[in-house]
Length: 331
Image (cartoon, rainbow, N blue to C red):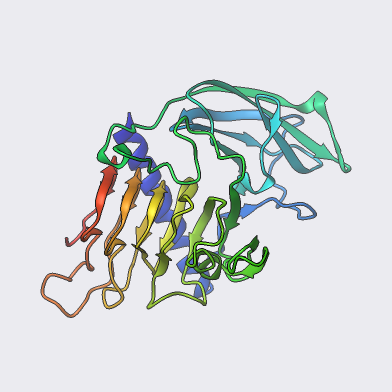
């Protein structure tokens, strides 16, 4: 089951990444958009009410897809009666999708309500039920501590977590209020700058970074990679859905504790800049799981024909790497 789901997700990741690359040269447009307050979406052949196309549970979450509804300007999505963030609702070519994360293991109900003329129309709503399962926390990353990052060990989000959503469109403008100096919280802009704001250890609230879609290099990186340096408040870096991809840059951790990386695809990393996902010195309680590691750009060394290391770990302790899939990697 998990292997089948990984293959489907890998196909979606590769397609999404290729679509964005094509768009850059003017031959195609991205097939996914996020529905946010005040934004619209492309009208495809529409139903008179929400028609569920598919739904399923996954590790501490669930998703549903549905046909667009005629006249709908958006959708409010509820799980077990609680509305999920609007950034979790996206449009693809011909269908809508919502992913709910941070769910305990068990049965959950997702209710999708179209918004027409600025108001919910419950008469056109529909529900989907799915069973979420618990992630496997039997690894060494959970000995003498936790690697659940911004989440509790039961899969729910910590109540004081800072959550940011990163898309290709907002990667350089996304903002969060963070206490980086111990003198009070202030706005920090850009995904790398937000992470860096944790380096002095003044911000105690855990950080949850949720990537949506295919992300190419942000304007600010550290030596070509997204650097997680001296983050100890708890951090989860995750992909939403089955196509979240870091395309062209890698993720590096050093001097960190209690960091989780999950549900991401890594593709086309520059070998001269480093690995797809690299754990450098002095990390502890790190959990990298349910990720897809694809080939990287060729490097100058003989063993870098398909990129540098896919998942590289150095001088770190209490580490769990689990349920990852490696696709035609060089090493």
